[in-house]
Image (cartoon, rainbow over all chains, first blue to last red; front, side, top):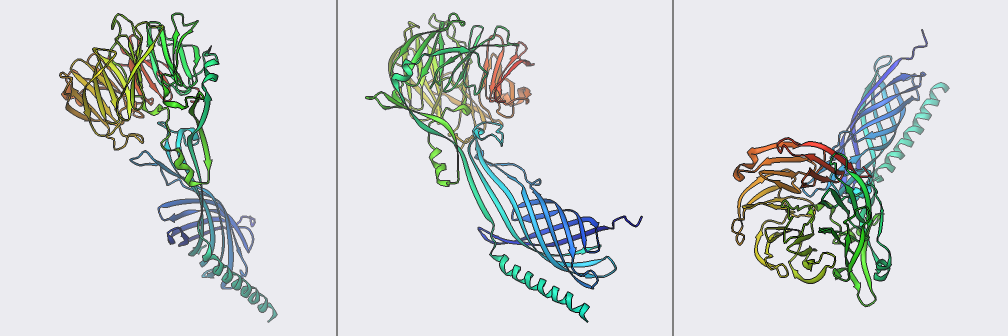
Length: 178
Length: 425
């Protein structure tokens, strides 16, 4: 069947940059796109990976798109986008010696990308890109008013602080696609 | 030719756009929006006349919400709901306790039972109820103005109390308002009387649970608040009379009687008072230790004290201390055992039952007080337990999730009889 859509993988490593209260931050990021080539110019798929912030790791889970402007050339301009969720699954609840509980929750993630890719074979490319990535996360700390506090019950906490953090990132990546 | 121009033009445009994007992006900083949610207590002013005129209503039984203290009286359990009232349960069958009545007492914190009279505080007053027929509880006496420390204006008859409130705000500085407010300390249910005080002075007293800030001894009712011990003559149980108060320092948590003496647990140590003259107890000794939360139980020779670290008990250690109290004038530390998070404890013969908070319940044989850690018998982990009362029919254990009873006729093998869960699960 000529209708079978070709599989596409695009795996990238990069630098996640931004600035927080303490100044610039630069960390590691990794992502991999697995999907299908819908048309000569467009591919869609699922994106996952790892985004590292200072002491916080996010597992992105998103739907992604890749579009190429000039597929006929050796040097090609392409764009991409992802929309999904960044999960704090690697984070655990920490309780300090003062019985203060600290934990984190993930949130919405969106990313837009523009970059070049260099064709090595018919469907194999080296890529370099720049993205704007926005990741929302929730950081909590609280002092429980009872043992075994329920995190969603305010009355279980004497004091409870929620920081909604929006990470605005500029991401530089290099990668390989086939 | 024309075919080549178009893509170049487009690429150029794209490049320019992306360059503009790069210029704009570095100005993006992480954004943080913080909301602070905290429990505080907003002041509520109450006219004394208003609550005195309002009837104390005996209601049908309602589910437990935040059980505070437990009193065993005959076949009945009295479970306080701080600030709200007292639950009355028929516990003739510990495997199936029946919720009978709820005595609606606003502003109550403590209770004690003397003969068939129940004492409870109602803001600034002490109430006495006749509970000889638990199906028909009667208010028999209101001793007025005996807890005057919450008067805001005695002349106009206004008291100030606090109402629990959850506040959410984006103003960080508001959080500090919540500090230093008096609270009903439901996390500090501690002391518990291991001694059956029955037949003391010819009167039969109920057996008090932990936060026992009310206690009975020698025809007198003793109450402690943070700083003071108040003494009431209850030789006529129906007619409690306020006598005097004694200043005790700070951070007083618990009080319980044993062999004519009063043991008072505070955040800084244990006071021992000689109450051989019950109307005027005399301080015999203070055992000071590091600041911690510390329930106490005693037998003839030893006092068992738990020290616990918690948010409210600064610098605490988690330990069980065994003190030699053969000479009550100079208690000495024999040995300290490390524990997980000890709260209340209960002593029954040679067996010590220790509530370890989230770590459940531990039992020890304490016939050799120097070898307690080597004589741990059981460790039940399925509930959160804060306090223990070894009752005549069952071992009653209380925690934030409810009240459980165990058959402890075989002290080495606890058997769960029943658990009453609180309504909010």
